[in-house]
Image 1 (tube, rainbow, N blue to C red):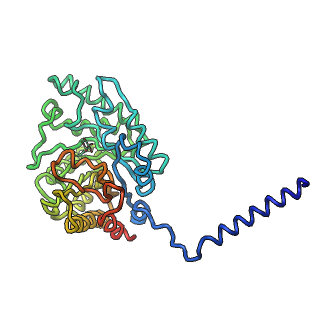
Image 2 (image 1 turned 120 degrees about the vertical axis):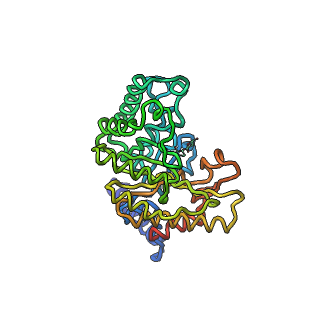
Length: 348
Ligand code: XIL
């Protein structure tokens, strides 16, 4: 067979295959349903999920994480115990792994967290510090981590969980050693290291209007008056069915927006006492919908992150005995009523 005939045959068979392929697709084929990320984007918001490094061996899990969500937050990888396990010795391996996945899947990343009383390395908590000793250690931690991730994270939860329920300052090692000014210092140091990342304060039980969210309201107002670079308030949103849906979520988001900061829902999950029943799952679905709706109603609410997306990897059962089923996908990665309710409020 001459070269040109064989080339013709190849072209012909390719055309036949193409035609057959086209014919095999029915004209009425349903378009691919939009993902939560795509639906949220129509509202100019992101919809994300936290993740954690041990989960990176689970291909089915990663497939959904990378396709359904437009944003991710490392659940543990950027915490102090992980990033500075020995004094002055930094390890960014775990955080970099999350960032690489996010980059491959065009996801935004929230940095979490620079200053927190929990999950600190023993070298920090096992001794006492004077203010003069602790201040440079805190500054170096914040700036080394923020510099490493400069340009790669959209937000930093600079200070996490600074207040008690009654609105008094939490007696963390930072508060006890440095006084309340550690918050403004932390924000200024983080801003020096990464001027483009939006800097957040983040906490739980601040969904509605209460003593704790009031404390943040007054603090952020003061910080802004003092010219301190605070640009966002994070509502963790760890809810539990047995405590009722918080009152005034939208009003609360709105009052922070009116102060001139953006708001993010950073760690949403809605747990229940086990066993889960169809009734509880239905209530959970309306709570997810109502929370997302409150964010959609406020322009400066920039997005919603759920604290991982499947009950397979939720932190709840490990911390709250006999509670769980907190996320929109079950342990087999199947969508629950909450997933469908979220899609619906997003217009899907
Ligand atoms: C949780 C993680 O999900 C767990 O894996 C870890 O064991 C404990 O911390 N508020 C926060 C998050 O700001 O960092 C916490 O994450 C959940 C509560």
